[in-house]
Length: 106
Image 1: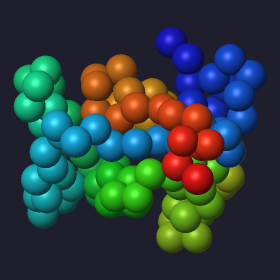
Image 2: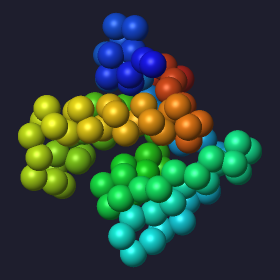
Image 3: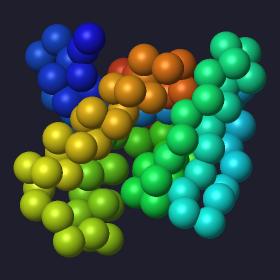
């Protein structure tokens, strides 16, 4: 599986992460739940995953997501980069987000 941060040599700054419109979000006390209505896929989120989903209300690059999370959480850049990459790749594999060329959103 390709990663948003290493996608065939494309840097994270050149790839925009976009929420799919058929995905419904429900906020819970300790996180949230995503449901892809078209595919019937359910995805549980913790508080950080919920924050990432909130940040993705506006399509943005993984680099921008990481920058925002580093401002909000006490975590090293490497830990944050690895966790965000893994999380986005899981969401992409489940059909909850898509990766697009940044030029599409400029």
